[in-house]
Length: 281
Image 1 (cartoon, rainbow, N blue to C red):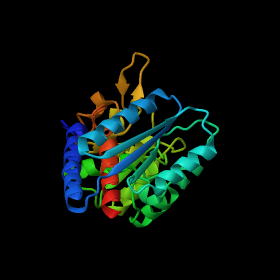
Image 2: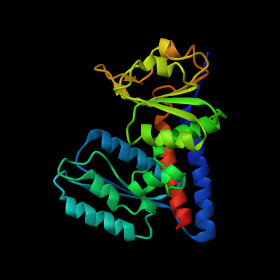
Image 3: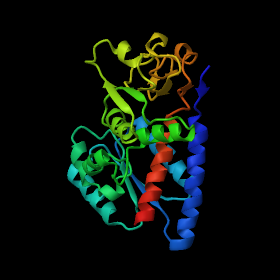
């Protein structure tokens, strides 16, 4: 039977450590970390995420600013707002909530953020510097996966890691992070042939494809560490991961559940990135 990785517990521990370091930063240098979240439009999921970020800021003692705009906000105006936040010394992290309305060029907005304040880790500068392991900030979800493995003392060096999914938010940055930690990495995607033959080789298997329960028991080798990044909602409202948990859990050595696994770590690492940005300011 696998050890169930408790992302909620680790997330709470990370936020507690961030809170302690925030108090120290305020006491010793008079700096309170500040996070600005920009929301354009009425996307319900985005509103939930923003609410979660506000709550996390309160928990760790950050200054939090929310800027909410209607979906017809002009791109030029959004770029002006980002530039104002870049210059604001009380703001150390800037997060423009995605997705943006179709008339706004997401790439242009992300590139307008000062890389030192890009606490999402999406700016091309930070993505590029990830190749050498020296970015200001790393993408929060893959960084949270590494943190989970470290906290559970799961060895990465020398192991074969397989990532199913090549998104710019999870799959690609995670591949670089694992390589920087000396894993041998294979990335699978929709064009991968005989995907089960590849996943069965994995000492560390990360499912981040966005397809409910696509990783079945016969696709996992005995003793593998299985990290499930997927969040898929059924018609009945139930949350499912990308891993068929009941089939895979008996074979795995460690496994993350959905919900309560990787999910809580994303906001915890956002808080960590913002604190680090403030400490460097």
